Image 1: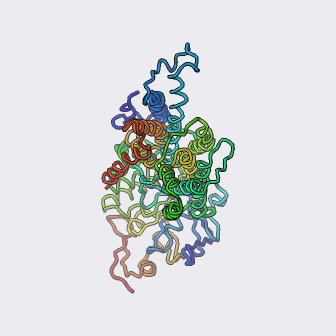
Image 2: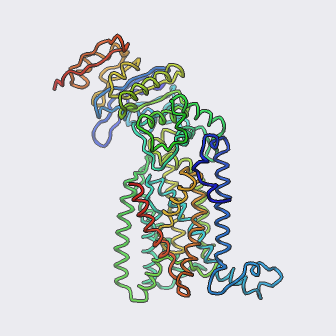
Image 3: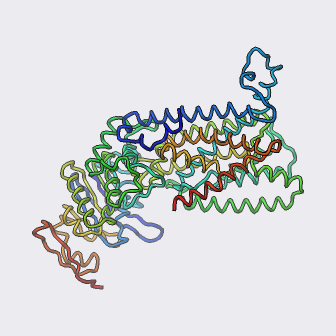
Length: 259
Length: 352
């Protein structure tokens, strides 16, 4: 269980997160919602140890993250950043094999088991045919799936995703969404998903945490938290939230700004 | 082994990426480019104003004292060739490390001000020398080493934040500012100097591999060896660092430690090279880019390949410098710059 308990963090003088508590239960798929600058990315970076909190505690199975080495932590928690821009032309296979880094010693080389995991991760994300391609030449959707494959190759039980569908068109959004749902269902990967896409969150997440100005506005099961009132409080937007029969989940139709 | 066998093109298929592929590629790379570097170092001393033959050089039946060919080969020409190999290997590897550290393929070993610091040290001694020597070490290399390490220390202190990753933009800004500042000081010292001193300064700035004996090379070796031992720890972390700082961190790289190690090792190698032969430009950027075109971008292959190709490249450039306008010798820095300038522009055009 990954847990943030009363966590605060600030960039410079202004508060970025204030007294935020989140429990990420094993096997859950938690959505992190909120307007731009509300602290979603900061919270994800705290949860994977890239940032250290100024107060409060982050623990993984009761152990403080600060007591784990980077390598140990990377064997339990992986992050899919919003965008990945390598400085050099790595191949897709090279990018995915980098996910094995925390499992290898300084001078150790990837063995057959590491390659098998990398291939399997490529297959799971539908990118096996891209293995020899240059990462930089891929489309946005292909890149995002390759980065997810790299995180899968890391073989962690927890996967943090920072707006994985932000730069994707509708088709790729659904494709990546379906991929995440399948990984959560079949491989029991615990996920925390920061997103602006309320409909994606409604279709995927069993729990939601709503962040506004660095504070938790609400948290709980998706059906309880995702309401017109909450959307109004979160984004200052009047929205219809309805269960959609054909989609099989709640949908959010924004109507107008209220401020 | 031909160079084409080391290319990645059609060879990089799925089954090439089998379990032993990195080791096999590394072995092939080291063997292939090692042979290239060794052959260059062996053949380069044969060329020069006096013709000598390789068979006579290694003819053991003639005593060394009577074997003029062997004396020319080992005493007159070999120190220069070896200093080219050491400097070329150090600058090319330092370039690879700097480019990964700054996440910028156009970075060079001199981007962060090391060469300007070295130049200032050298020029101060050339201009105000009181002929201080420490044992076998002559004052100009010592002063340039001191200047280089001083510049590196300033940038290091400015860019390091306790417990956090170095800021690449602070590194770059500090380096660029230091380069300009030291250049201004160099001009000021030049203004104070007389013609002879100015001429020596300009010659030093052009870079020169004619070290005279094996002494200076041996003196620089400890630094170079330490730097290469540090390089050996880095390649897989450099791969991740060049993908992204956060990405590296979440994949288990201790980013702050890797950056410090990368900065210190590249600065050490560059300082040693510059104090030995002056600031020889463009080796640190041409060689890594050529190598990436041939072997791909994995730093586990690129770093050792660049060291070997860098050695061969600089020895070959120096051969051109010695023979192009013989009996006049062109400074090797002029040759690498004449090759490197257009190459750099071509890279920029190709990237956009």
